[in-house]
Length: 298
Length: 256
Image (cartoon, rainbow over all chains, first blue to last red):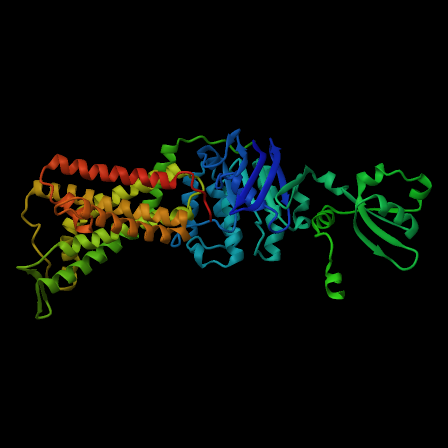
């Protein structure tokens, strides 16, 4: 249903996406994870047909997405830069969207307005940042587009509403299964509803897999410094910390550790601990070299 | 998958956009009426107008000119066209592509031109009706009162086409500004330089009263007495502007 083949996008010579390839062929909730500037929004805009790829292509229903009217009818992109007529009320905007998105559920939209205490006659431009985000989400979910792209949907929302938000997305997905992509740099809060993760870093797709794969991506090894040192010499270490004289803890790739040529006797002296997907994401996207401590200690 | 895949034609999407744009821009007509009222006030200073007794207002005297009305309507059309063109960078509609957005813009501009043509003839009567509610006897002018149906139709038709030209010029400029942003003003400057140099070169190379100033452009249309030649000139101009606008909007990205 959606596919990117070596999708590349440059803005005035600056690379936003580089050779991105992945495919989602059936209903699922996928978290698009990456730090700020990783290329999440550019990817979403490319799938929505807003941006012309500099190389490769983004496909929706096997058709190039850029300026494609079939893609436009079946994809809704909910992001902060959604534009509405300045004088339009929320009710008018719902009516307007229901004319364009033929799957639009007006009853659901009105129910959600009521649930979130939004006045039908309020004008979008008069709403606060968080309430605007809530209204955009109401439109995005009520549109029931086969491909729903939610770019940082919780941005600016109150903590209470953020909790409701993911519950709401899940409920709506169960009611109308479709492809939902949610981008965020906070994996933890949306983890409970995700099935897959698309991990983007510096414009590249680093990994696209099920949530369970990310749950066992990195591990923490804890043990005597001499054994840890043996591992450190042969594997990439994402983080290392000393706990007093006789204990050191490192974070490494689980698969690489399992393949490491290390005797069972030595392995048995190490304690293994899983790293959460959010923790893995933090380690994998951390800038190499020169941490904050170095900056202040130099 | 429970969400049905939709495959509406570009035309049906463009029609929905046209209706939606008209609905959300309905205030534009109120703005036009205000401009017409200002036009009448300007006319009163150039013509003869007087106000007496608090219940009688008359601007229908002798030298009244409708030119300010046309100037105001042209200004309105350029502004509307420019707004639609410039909105391309904002894209109010998710279900859209450059073709449907362009098509609906053009359709709305044509409806605007038709309405503007009609209002230019009849806004005086409308304002008179509203004016009569506040002032006992409210008279603006009676220039269109007894010109006959064929003259009404001719004025409406010609007015519509002229207004459409100005609206489309505004639209083209709006799209170019939206698309090229910082380079737009450089483009304007270059166009002005090329225009001036061109008119100098033409006046040197061709003997006789040929120049490329604005009044020459207006005379090209206004001095044409043969109806079909005039119609061809106007329609070709509109077609050329439509073509240029489409080229400018084609492959344009949505940079919100």
